[in-house]
Image (cartoon, rainbow, N blue to C red; front, side, top):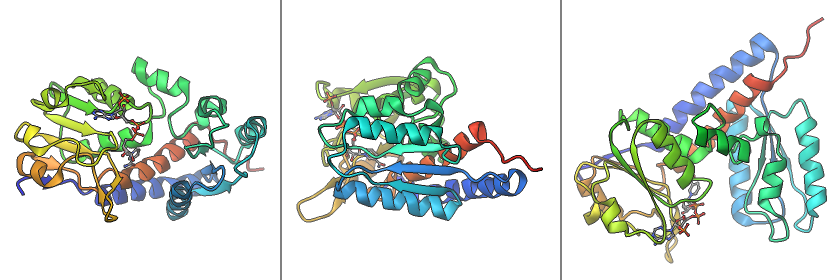
Length: 288
Ligand code: NDP
């Protein structure tokens, strides 16, 4: 293997330590404890695992968290009422509605009902729009984490050719915008793209598709920085990314492993976003 591994676990641990230090300072100097409310509707097994991990990490960094767990058959109006209640709760600085939602609920309506300043996922149209306009905003956690990984390895996007594969609203599109903001020349690919042609020549390649080993190592420009967001379970239970890891690691200069690359960064950046929301909009209790 020629490439250097990008250790997402180590970088995420650093982000968590930074957040914890700032949370401690907020508590001592301002009597303010950042609070994160997580809404998990129904019994999606993956959501259960993600939410319990988010609560665990919140506890580790000193962020107070609450889980709201309405039944699978909650009506949209009742869920909107819960979101509204959390919007008005001064102890709650961040609200996260875990996706996917049951089919009868419209995620766009629910996400749009979260107060933009409490939208720690960065999915609200106002926050997504601010990113598009290049304004300061709450950034979607996964691409935000990828930007931090690039920074950690000293990869400066300015002037580089960045190729993002996948155009979802939660990863691919915000990823492309964040790289553009850092002055990379960005190509955003999707299921109708000629991937092999686009990937060839990428200095920075970010893949977020959800198809095991879709991107072949032989397609890479030698020396490329490869960030694999994908998480796919193989029939024998192994977790693999969207990039053919072994072959890619022969050509790349840096590469994220799966697991242990982007995955741990997503929750770490959620903590960062919650802390930032508390700093910006939290109100320290008045001492009399
Ligand atoms: P989506 O399913 O929402 O989007 C997938 C994207 O990939 C779409 O834009 C789709 O194109 C594109 N695509 C599908 N097939 C191909 C193909 N053959 N060639 C090129 N593009 C293709 O996925 P997400 O963005 O939510 O997630 C992507 C992956 O990242 C998943 O494996 C997911 O598990 C993982 N993930 C990991 C996270 C982490 O923390 N590590 C966080 C979030 C996601 P089109 O738009 O044309 O349909």
